[in-house]
Length: 264
Image 1 (cartoon, one colour):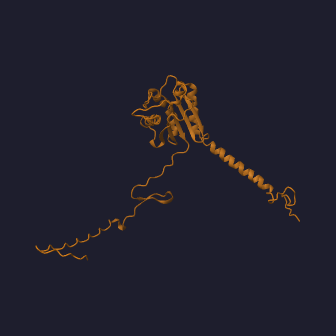
Image 2 (tube, rainbow, N blue to C red):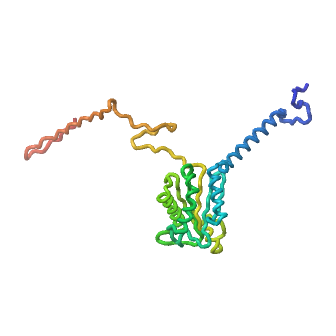
Image 3 (cartoon, helix red, strand yellow):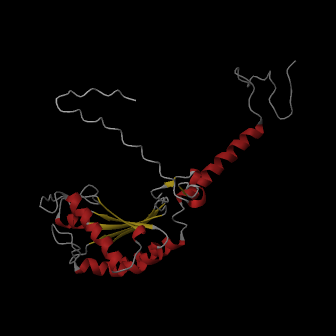
């Protein structure tokens, strides 16, 4: 006799597979609910940057400047953070060819950008990226476009530190050379677009860890480091007495051979 349970298909039903009894109806609904919850949290994670009001405000300000023509480039936001790309306008030049010093055009672009970055600089890490075109370089100062792009990004960071008062722990510089173009390097105009500086405001800050000073013991599970144990009472450890010097054999009289001395 087949076992019959309310809400379940009988065992002798033709729809029952040979491998066993099918799952109860409520389990299907439960599995759907779990799947929907997973999708919901994935969407929340993907929109974590978009839900950030500080970055939203910064994005709107940058878009407004680009629409007015006071700034050339792109701005985009995703789950990793906010990317602000500064591109040279028709008559602008951020850096002279083969050099890393900031021009007046670059300093002017930074003056317009800094008020947007200031509210973000205290909360998030800002990575300054340097990019070049594909024109090769080989000088005493720069062996390749990697060195050139890194030096340009570093000089931008130095300007933010010395003139704009940004926190050094919140800034970093990196050079990508010519290996991440936004357009093909086949015309002078496209090469101009690829010579750009990107400000990447990261949603996840660098994981700082407390350094352990010399003489301190590294504590487990993130507890504060403890200094090395000192002797009781704070006294210095007693000095060990020096061993007495070994006795030297007496010199043998002239004309006699010295006899060997046995060890003690």
